[in-house]
Length: 134
Image 1: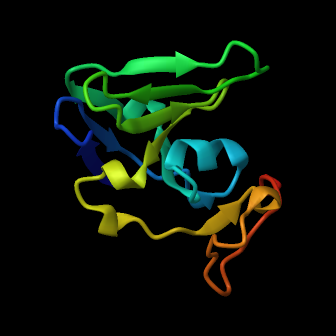
Image 2: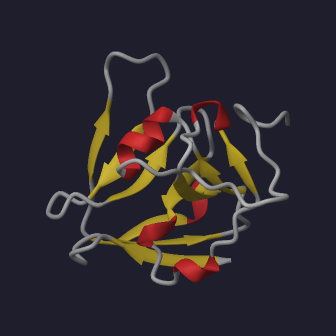
Image 3: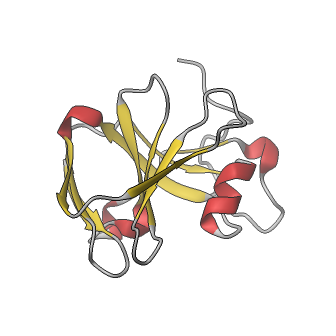
């Protein structure tokens, strides 16, 4: 699979190739902050198939959290495009930044322990209070 995308203003662009490792919606409280209140729709892609093709993002990592993720976003318009999780050989791509978001077909919902009443999990979709067992 090949995904292309970028930020709202078009300054930062990326490509990701490979087999998706996870396609999901995340309901954790951190993702609610980042998304503006809803679940975060994402695809985890292999890190070795990912590259920025135009400009470079700014990065932010909270210093007060153990194993804090790094969030990458456009320095111009602020669009959050990528999350990198320590120890995970993947980049977590935000579906809203895809050139073609219709390529997204979520397989599961995670961190439903933080799910809000207004969040929708499609009927029949596997859901997990945290992460599924590997």
